[in-house]
Length: 180
Image 1 (spheres, one colour):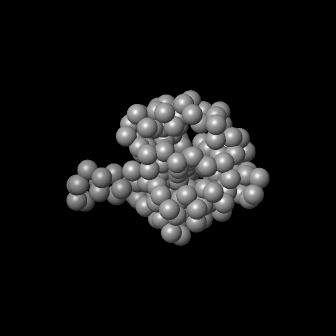
Image 2: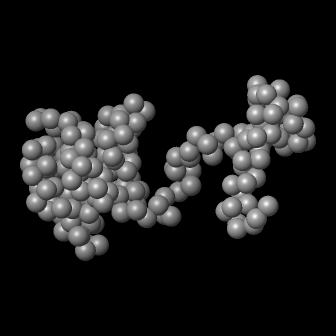
Image 3: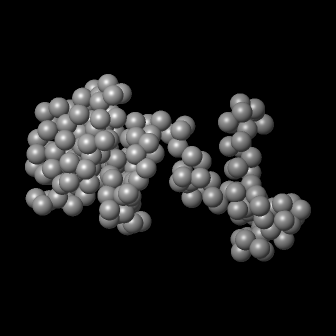
């Protein structure tokens, strides 16, 4: 299996490349977007780590190319230009994740190689639905499960809150395999 590292300062990735090679990966390193795109189509890597700005284009084009032609390739954007809009754009283009630079190399390897069990829980991004559910459950505890009081605190209609709680309960049952 090959890993493509696409970065205009590819020489800075020597340690990362050595660690990946020690894990048995063939390493392809490119410093331009055009070389990265060509190498990607030729080597058909299982994993790609790319920066965004290149002298000859944007790494987002590489992400789109991989999504279109190599959909099973795991692509991680590793950039100095990490912000929420860029992360959203990368996800829409097909990137698995966006990791800001500088980043601990072990953490980066865990993200790139899918070993998310080793990523500390406090570093994992929770879904909006999970955060919403946790907030609602906390308000329910604060209000001693009083639906009307919780709905007022949450600025929700009481029936809407009841439907949400029912949905959460149904999801919990389906996760443990209990029929209601």
